[in-house]
Length: 218
Image (cartoon, rainbow, N blue to C red; front, side, top):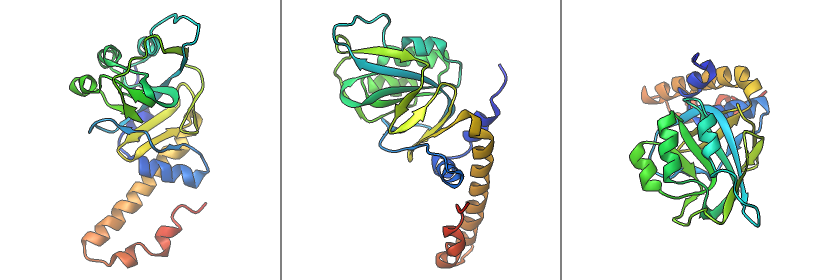
């Protein structure tokens, strides 16, 4: 399988630079409030999407998240829309084991996960709003896999690019990656030069003057 150039370049950036680039380009994509559930590495890759819902009278046809794991390619990120629910888990340990075995880069859930210690032991990056031991069994089922979803007010489509780290999450529309990634790289280059000036003794008031405030101007 060919290396995905945009995913590889995204992985060398951080969410702040990518968020700034999308601000400059007028693209909505920054998500706050979903954080690593333990210290973990930055992840970047293409989205495999899942939407969950309350079970009601409907019987589950497949265990939630399982289809996403099976359909994922190595390096993909599973992104789960659970509408921000933190009272019941939308991800768990067996799924984490399967995802890690498949080569999934990480899991992001707009909601809660259980078996967090297990996922950490596997080395699987796991992002969510909370942790809970309460099982989804009999409570939550999967509504769809690889259909458009929304997390934190941001649309996510299958194949969109996602980057996540300790600062938050940014979704990059697949068709805009060729604009966003180079712009984020330019921002990193400029900020690295500014940091070098500060380390060399230049006053931060001078380094972060009007040029910094206008850096994201269109």
